[in-house]
Length: 417
Image (cartoon, rainbow, N blue to C red; front, side, top):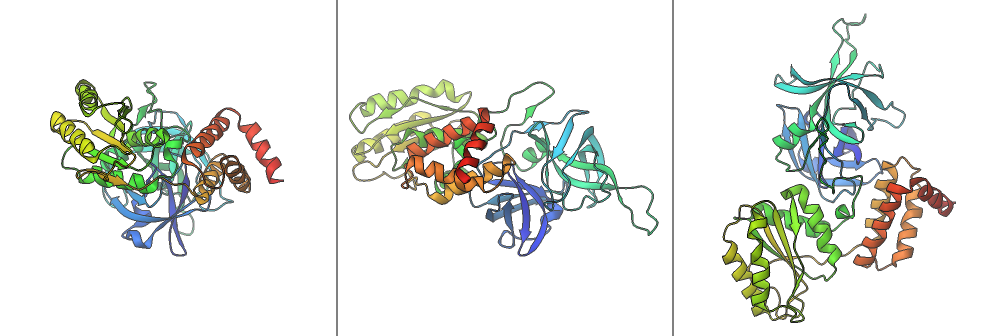
């Protein structure tokens, strides 16, 4: 997970954390009435991200910020259970304490400082700091999964000698499921008390969240503006890894998604009739989940591609779930009308640098290791950062982070030395 600070110019307003790859959660009183142009999200790795939109709900004292670029590490989300041991990894300053404690209530009804009645998690804090300002907006985690957004400290019932009421060792947090529901984020929240598993992509990190920002932005805009649930995208790329990662990434926005078999019009492997029959046989699948159909069309006649899109659109009409065609490569004559053309996928060294910085900080490794890691990846893939080979190298790195973290850290320390 990526923690960070919400800032306005030189002012540090409070904590925040990535809830999805583009959405940062914080407390509403942290941002107050500020607009997106006034705010930035600064990750623990020092990366500054512009804020494109702010949505606040004072009734639960939570705000979400849409940031301009993808964040590489997306957390698992789950429900809190009574007596669970929780942790807050964010800190207002580097020398401040990390908060830990126990969940003492999961459905406590309170009236917040804004006068709104709300249901919160009640948290007993082990660190008796007597003042928890600056921690507002932090992610409350249990076993690494986010259970809530920290919003309020509870004052002692008896004032101190100077008339000020210090904070008791009790904090309130808004359950993450309530945040997901209130802001209609559409991401999966597991239930720890039932042993539910969250979606496989919601792990420590996944190549699905690496860059492709321009493509992802265009897809989300098309989804938001769609009059129905049938969409066609065209992308000038032949790498299967691009579509595989977009499919995995899309699950957090549209729900469970099935990627169907690849079709190929570009080399006459499939006629239009064959492709139409193949794509339109997923009616039953669409009853249960969203469907993505990748079709290679590089060099295929534009008329054939237009006919494929028209016939599939007519066959499905207005499906209840999302049906998306991804056309890979540019047909002779360009993409036909009705196709949303996506930017060509490209990676830059800066993308790798940010990815390595975020993962290094999340592992609590020394920050200089990120530079050594970047040099290692670029050296293995090449300065041009071919999309396919970059994904393969990142997948290998992720595997080592999960299964051989000590060996990887030692290797990077040797490189850095």
